[in-house]
Image (cartoon, rainbow, N blue to C red; front, side, top):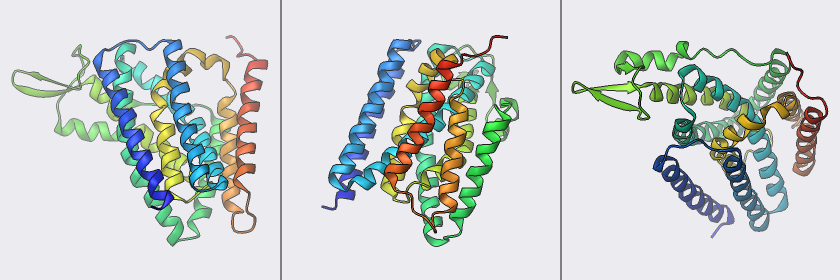
Length: 305
């Protein structure tokens, strides 16, 4: 059997089994995830992703392994920005902490399927239209400057276009005190504030994917590498969200570091036809930038108002 096929089978079996287990745990009992629990969950998902990366190196080659780890680190670091946006969404809708894991779990499931379509479409575009690589490169450079200089974007959930469209077909009861996505009142089905928050989280992740997927395609166009690294990063977002909620004050310059990473991969895309940067060098550069931004955050603490 081809090693790529073997890795696909291992990936599908592992990710599905772990996600079902995670879904059952989150649905079994609504609870606030503590700092300790979120750290343990983060460590678990990173360990699973790392073991898979080592397996890629063992079954294929080390170059593919370095591509996988670079793509994974980039996607995971870009997820930091998503997490702060999700925090604002939950705050806007008034979602209690013990019910946030449920929304994130189902949101991640939707993200896995959306990214499957976008990644395979992106790879197909790059393979058929070589010039598209330069378009992606320019998009990443633009995003990098926007992220570095403009800071946080204003999130307005009430203006979400998908939520507006759905509200025309499904009645919403935004005042119902429940942890369910739908309720019945007088024999009529209503969507709840939980479902509204889920829709905004899903659509927001779709917007972020427009930036993150070209960034990963700058590292590799191998469907296995791109999709598995992306999914392993995405499925770890739930635990990352709660961990960042506790330690966000210590990573104030991380977003600046992520923007510099985007600038690097954008330039890498633009010069890819003229100069090939080995995957191991890209991994070193990305890790160095992110480590530097974290160290800077620890050395220079957040200014108090």
